[in-house]
Amino acid sequence: MTANTAELNGEVIEAPSRSVDVLPPDVQTKVQELSPLDGESQMRHVTALLSHSRTGLLAAIAAQDLPGIVAFKAKAGGIQEMAKQLRLGKDMQSDAAEFVRRAERGVGAGIREGQADGTVETNATAARRREKRKQDVATEHRGSRLPNARDFAKQSELYGPDGSSGIYAMTDGVSDEQFEEALGEARAEGNLSRANVARRCKAKAKPPLADPVFDAARSEPGVGVPKPFHGFKKNSTEMLDSINHMLQGAVQTLEFIDADDVDPAQRSRIRTELFTSLNTIRKFMKEVSRDR
Image (cartoon, rainbow, N blue to C red; front, side, top):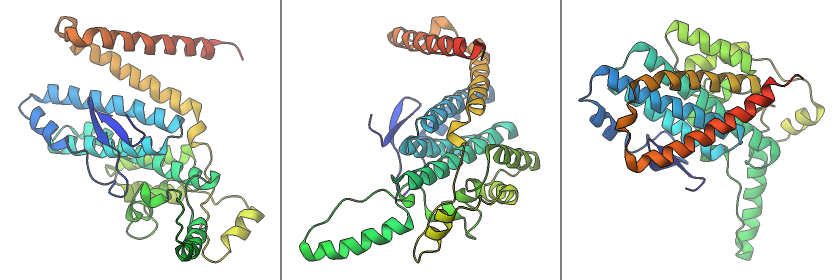
């Protein structure tokens, strides 16, 4: 599996680039497969998929794997669409919409951090590249370029239709605490749209501290320096608490599983992977339990 692929319910899908709003191709197929089932079975299936995807998104964020985060953003959109088409309960649809917003914030954070560390192109580096390309054409030489923000999300997603209600509004100058507050308020209101969450985040956002280097660079013609983004990928408490909630959900799902019905051909692989995960959790819990 390459960096540009992800797995949706056991099937490999391409991580989208410039067409990131396209749902995984098998979403409609999954909806058709689940449609004949009763509501409880549909809910279990989508809940399991959502829990697995949340874990994968956290892992991609922790690894600073921007293509992986983009892939899980696409998966988030697929899960949300499944919940809508299957007409699952209000709470499930809200859970799916919340997952989409978290994945979008992950994309925004990844882009901003990539721009800060030089692995994602900014407006300034793009301008220099275009100038150099003009010179290279004369010498018949073309160099490679860094990815830019629009390789990971559409401009309309990043900025929103009004230029200030997109992914960046949920990222720039917005702390984890402010994002959680905005998300909670939007959920209570029953409107977890990107525009609504972004507006609430923007209202809570604090401007970055004065930085002479940053301000000087921002004032240069054609330079688009991103606002600093701090802490999203290093909030260990939030990530551990999210894993805790996911594990609780996974444990509750066990009551619906009949061990005798597990495919014998898959049993050994699943058991080995589960034991590996459990051992990793046990080792980490020893670290958490240590007196500091």
